[in-house]
Length: 420
Picture 1 (cartoon, rainbow, N blue to C red):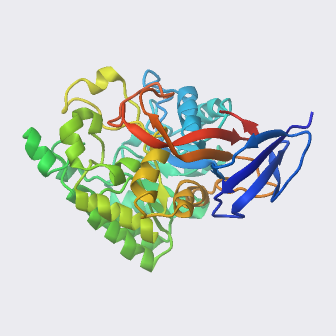
Picture 2 (cartoon, rainbow, N blue to C red):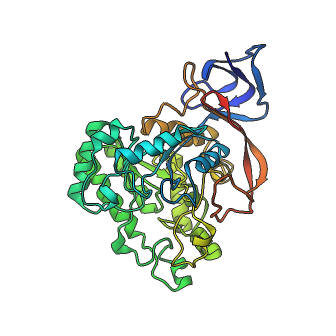
Picture 3 (tube, rainbow, N blue to C red):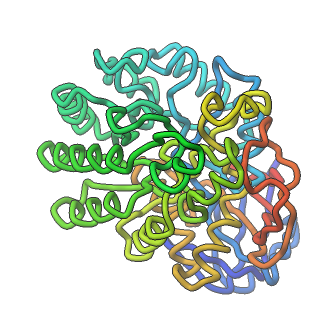
């Protein structure tokens, strides 16, 4: 049976294709027409008047904790959280229990992801058990569907091993994503060494932890020609290193998390473990540098680093509580409120950062509304207010809980079906 959906009267913001006041016709899961004044009598009509219509959002940095820690999140609850945040494609990180260092675990994740309403992809690990000692079987993992490689959650300290990994990834056409925190500069992770650490009377995490690793990995990427993704960048120096690196090679890429362009270490003082994350929230100067990096294209992607933890875990106290916050359901609002509304980014720049750029960098067939392609579309009201008082995620660890935000997801279409 033929299914048709007609999205009418919306303001289409589509950096990789047609934009403007356009209608979109979807037939049998694919985009069949993008133009003005489409008429289809047998289609289900979505009136998007006054709303923004964009490609489905793409997040290349999420943790769904499945397998191993499903009390925090599983693939189904993570997918629901993603959909209600406007995301239709997710690339999962590999620091599960067991880690995604085998084709068996990767198959488990991808098979379970295929049962959800969205598109689930996964990175595989760079090293077995994330121990930083022995490279995984890159060839077998790519054949099994790995979207890229990362040991996110742990830095890779062995320079020779990293260089070998980059050369293998380059040969396979895959990106390597780096968690940039040298533990030798960290006394207590998750809290910035500065005002926040002084407030708590601890050593915290020095900015040099990130800077030194970014400097090293850009150098290695330029030597090998491999594509790298500097994850969740948090320091002004790190942004500048990427800026200069990109002038030397187009294979240098970086992502910014919404919390790093929305909050500073003041939030860690106010919210405690609910604002504890790796790398930590830093200074206002750093926050502004991240925004400037997004503005001038140094940082190409916004990635949520969605990191669910249980209430019991976050209540253990600052030093014992795990780092990380959920982010999929608040990402759009934070980007609108901190990037678009103040005039730092246009709506087109924002949509590029959360759809087209991450999809292209990870080689995903997503991030654009185009005839013949799978219909993944997000429709939202950039002005509508909502209270972040409940979440579709299994966890609710975020300093934004209870806050009034604006930017409300209204409809999401994925694989040609209306999923919210």
